[in-house]
Image 1 (cartoon, rainbow, N blue to C red):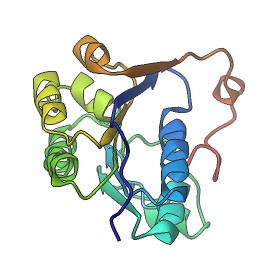
Image 2: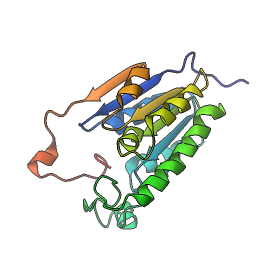
Image 3: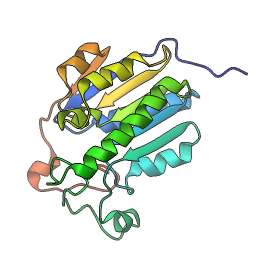
Length: 198
């Protein structure tokens, strides 16, 4: 039996300074998997092996493949086991880490995986989570991302997330959603919470 495909794959961008970009992309993927579509979710600049989305997507395999290309948190094992929480040390975020060499190397590995996923025909939806931030950090050029989008199969939906979406990427997209902060618990000293922020 032939696998169902999307009638037309579009390009979506979730950007802005507020919470919810990765969450929105995950929700879109959950909906798609429910209809039997195959998803590849590639995270750039994130390497925490304790995130709820990583645990959830493992249960949806083989229709949902989840790949991380980010520097690992030094507390990852303890957070995953529930014995610790995010320390906010910034080691897993390139904009907080003084040495970006490893972050850049991981971003390039992730981009190679993205090129393969977008052009392979194996997936119906490919999410490039935090690719906008990888572009903003100048690890990946907007021109390389546009070239990648040119290679996508007509039935493949590509979702690009992260703050600071490049104007050329937004122009190329069919849908752009900007998350605007109005109020956030961080402003009241409430730190990241298991199952909500990670």
